Length: 110
Image (cartoon, rainbow, N blue to C red):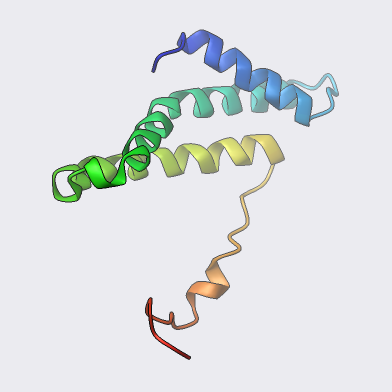
């Protein structure tokens, strides 16, 4: 990660504060610390995904597939945990119902 990890963690802590009203509870302070940790811990993964997507024709998909899988495996649980800390509950999955429906292949007509 290019930025100082402590500075990135503090940025995310401030974002948490902007999205939550301080109530003086230790539970909210713990959620703030948890949110900042998870967001800062996956910041390099987000940068790496951006790097891959920034030059899609210049990236060898076969050579980067395992790295991509590792990024997803590390990133997604961190994002879910960060959301849980931010909101105090699990992140709803708006795609779950849609995934139960058959997909129309790209280029197919209905």
